[in-house]
Length: 480
Ligand SMILES: [Zn+2]
Image (cartoon, rainbow, N blue to C red; front, side, top):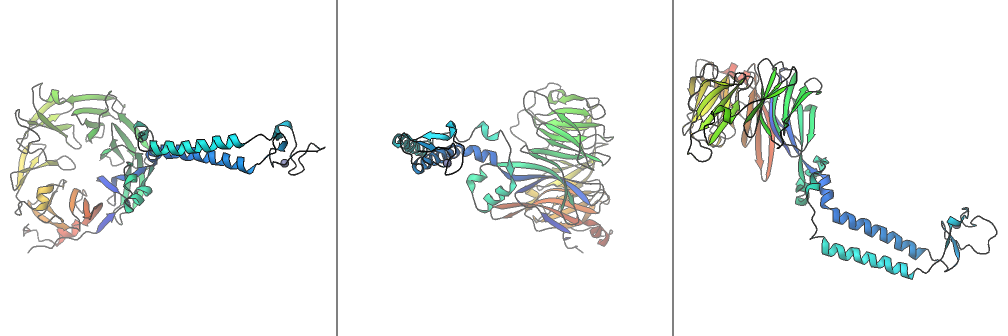
């Protein structure tokens, strides 16, 4: 019997142009942390872009006010007038203006002068401003380093510009990055724990004790208390050239954070005393031998990494299988070899399994990272479906491997305990980004994209997979 695909218990979308970069399930079983990148218009950049119009408008305003005053305040040449009300002050005995009552000090008496020249000069300046704008508004620079001096972001204006196709406003796009807590029951954002502007966010990692988390953004990692979002510490790369951190994990006791830069340098940040050290880089890993490409991946919640080397002579990122070695980051020595694995492999969230595709149509090898042995090979019968070719692996925890099915809107769960297909989850989406499973195996959460016309919407989809497992007859393997 083939079980029908399990429908989702929730499909959640978020207002505006919100990218969901990463998700982490929280130990309470009812919330997750998500990294949102919210599309926004940088108002400062818009102001800088409009500097010519702003200067011209201010100049015209000042000149028009001056001209109106000149034309309205006719004065008799050579005669004193009240500064406030322009009353002609002749034949007066008192020191007070009879019209408005102001005390007539010498400052408050103005003598009428010929104004034809002043009117002509003001009109001439107005003409000069219009002529200058007409010739200069296309030639003067409108954007430069000044445009990025300040991040003054408006997600609301970005939404407006997107809806009304104001592409000139969309050119001033920047991002607001947020770490938010989401209630899995209804998808609502219950708290915003971190909010920062502009910089590209990296991964999110939960501390093993479940009470704090690490968030990397640009060249900075911050450590936050989960209860109140308070910052507990920060690690910043202090090298001269700006480098982005793009991989992050913490060891099993939660004492050392490992971070890797885009150019494959691994750093350790010791939380107890705040010290840091440069652990190793690719030259250490290859003993100085010339190699063209190396792929490094930190094993989640372990003091270990996987180094893959592409043989000399091959060009570009090679889809072939690469020699893979596990290194210990505390001793900085190799601990053993994993055999040839594609660089697009995936690890389980606790760092226990490695799942790697092989061949075409692909089969999936499941390696035990502790013993470095091949545990089993998952052989999907559907071959090269649309989901398989686009993004063939999504997520793995200690028990399940989640793979996209033959239909783009399906996820297939492989049960590592029984070495059988556990079931199929489906949702109305166009493609899958990543999947996470609750540690007790009761819930699957995935990030997906839906394409409707030119609009791409990110979604969070949840399923209660405990029902799927309960309904299934364990003696009867589910045909994929
Ligand atoms: Zn007066």
